[in-house]
Amino acid sequence: MLNTRALAGTQYRESNIEAFEELVRTYDHKLYRVALRLTGNPDEAKDLAQEALLRAYRAFDRFKMGTSFEKWLFRIASNLYIDKLRKYGKYRFESLDEPIPTKDGYVQKILPDRTCNPEDIAEQNELAEKIQAALQSLPVNYRMAVILYDLEGFSYAEISGILDCSIGTVRSRIHRGRRLLRKKLAPYVYQGTDVEVG
Amino acid sequence: MIRNMTCEKVKSLLSAYLDSELDYHELRQVELHLLDCSSCQRECRSLRATKDLLGTLESPPLPGEFWPELKERITSRSVSRYYLRLLMKVLAPATALLVLAILPFAITTHEGASSGQVEAKTDLIEPYIREYVISELDRPFSDKTSLGFVATAQAVTMYSSDFLEPHDHHTPREAVVTQNRTGQRTQANAFQRVMFLSPR
Image (cartoon, rainbow over all chains, first blue to last red; front, side, top):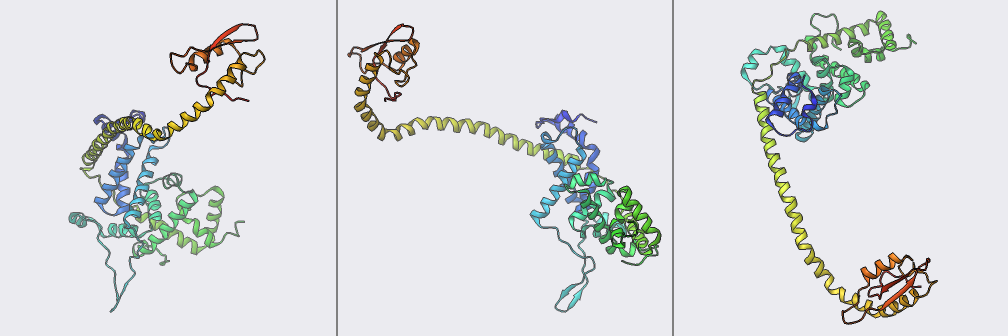
């Protein structure tokens, strides 16, 4: 791997961009995956991941040598995502199956389709869509913790560093997130199991 | 202690249990509880099924345009930031020069009204102080420090040469002869400005 010192005091030169690319090549795909699971939209995910890398590139002088670059990078990304949610107010907690009250009674909610490419829609199976939609419906803190652990394999300690909270909080967020997911994905969770919907 | 652990407590630990993130004591308590509690066993199985379900999600590929776009973003922002910094580098000294150019005029204008009054007052008291200093300097036991001198020949020479120029060249300088502790005699010029004195 490239020595991270090579980028210390980085100036905006083509060679530095190449060096930066080499450094973060290990993490770019992972970062994009997390962004996609967080946003549920490929375009937003790409924008989020690129913006996070851009900020990492610009703030590289402030990276403490000897600490985890991956954790630093994902922390930038998670803070960025939360900032965007606060700024644009896109995030809201919504129930997948809660009917909407109207003058003429209740109507079943039709969830917004967060995928933009029709070809992708055709390729994705129903389960993946449901899981993604269920993830989208989670409160952002639960969603982040669940994605980082269950989808990307970070440890509780690493997640605590990324999300800047205690390990106990990480444990609690993952547990509550899974319980909410279990409720929303009940037909799939309990398929083939002998347990009842909790 | 193990018997005291409630189902509610065990259920709150089940995700961490599945993730092998419990400490030794918690792990033993949960395992022992699960042996006998069918409700917690069901809870545990459903949480495991949920976790497994998330694991079925496929990993989306990184878009091909990801890095070309990112490089473009880095470069374009870098260029704009570069020019911004360059502009600042040019503007900051220019502003400083402008301020330096204007400052003397501003100070002169500001001081213009009051400077005359200060001079007048100084001129009024100056002859008296000067006479006092001259007479005191000539006395061997006078406190030279209170007169603004350190009682050495060098100091007298320094003050006399630096500060004590006469008003005009037609007036002869008044000579002051003083003597330090070693008996060395030093001649100093008369005083024009004695504002540094603190007369008793």
